[in-house]
View 1 (spheres, rainbow, N blue to C red):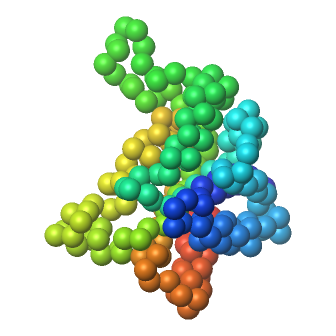
View 2 (spheres, rainbow, N blue to C red):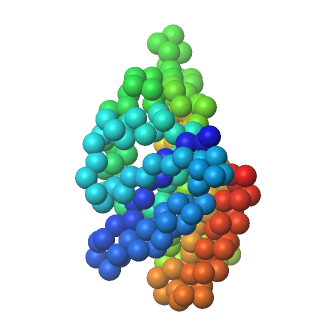
Length: 199
């Protein structure tokens, strides 16, 4: 049995209703079934949560899944607040011990004090930006991928805790170019990606 902790960071804010991240989380519940040897827990961070219980979920999980929109080129402020609270409280409680450095050589080994080295994580993001904005060198992101560009510090945050990455999945152009047909196609692509990564 693999334990899956799903963090749904979809939000009701400004013109965003969080519906797509809710839908993606629902697709997870269809995929990660007990019949296929999975058990899952979900936190929707727009609901109230208890920090100590969230630490317990991280420690219970074999794989942590993050679902979130990208706002102004980074994670939503509510997800940042959640991570600030949970990760800070998780110090020496099984999430990380220190920053990894030793007093006799303070310039080396920063970021190696994580305690969750036996766990992995998986990320989805939702974007108004089209995929070509990342793949065409003269476009806005200058050929940098989501993971090597905007999400680089997010991945380093997880590495600091010892977590190992699984291949991400990014949903592009979902605000100006979405209809039921495209949503169904995205679901099929996503479920195929889950099959490739988790089975």
